Length: 171
View 1 (cartoon, rainbow, N blue to C red):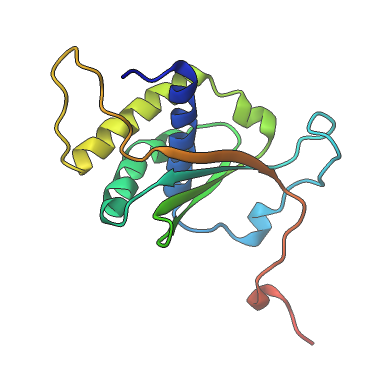
View 2: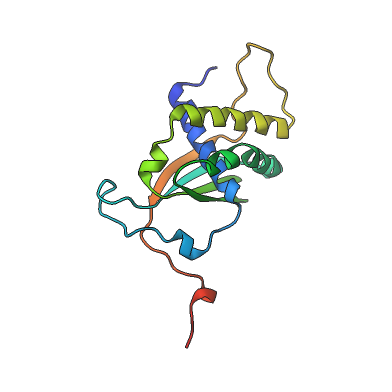
């Protein structure tokens, strides 16, 4: 069964987000995350945006998912204009990975050509199959489905930031 172009794009975008989150691996200081003032509409003033992706990651495959993210999406994301960082989180109850990818602006995020995202997604899926030691198909055979399929994708707009308690001065 072949996947349609929209399904493939959705999977690529999801993996892209996951890779972004894994690349950063740790949170950035709150001051670096503070976005410009949020405007009522995206087109009026550039505002920071967080790409949100959820992917299916079984408990036994978590290490392979992280390895594939670090090998592919991480280096690629660091080269993208407007990329601020990403957080990779794992929900043990749902067995899902959550990727939060921070961008300086929606414009910069959406300016990335789909062809580039698809190419990195293909690399990610191949790296994931290698990390999971899945058999590769015969030449000319359909590529196996993404080992970490997209569950949901979306975007969040910055509206505020609460600093950590340690960063707040008490008098």
